[in-house]
Image (cartoon, rainbow, N blue to C red; front, side, top):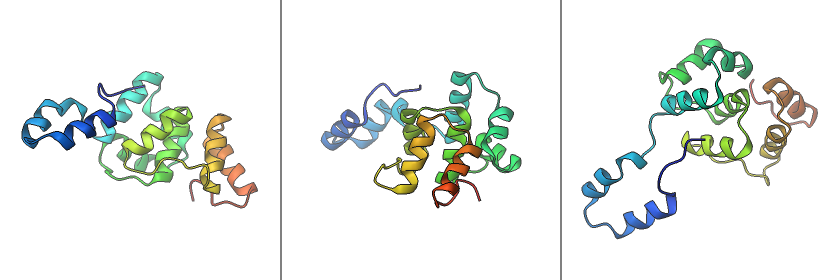
Length: 144
């Protein structure tokens, strides 16, 4: 899984002490997140998967999913990011990282809906199986 050279805590500590913001930004340019579509490209390469394969597995509208993966859709919803994470076969740690990368909240086990998603990821369920599990437990499905 792609990782930055510095952890967020170290980066934050440096920023708090920095007097020259422009210099700090220049020194840490490699630590800033790239656009989401670039991160998806890295994930596809790491997992040795084709975009079309992931889109088919995701259950998302094909055109909409292509727009997410190509960067034309800039702020996809948390549910759509989760559908893509499941379709990519990401584990829980990778999914949590993707959610944060996409500027969404991480899955939280004290939230009933999130707990079902966590369980589904741990069980390596498909998007369809995840939706069936959510429905059987009276929760809102991942994709409407």
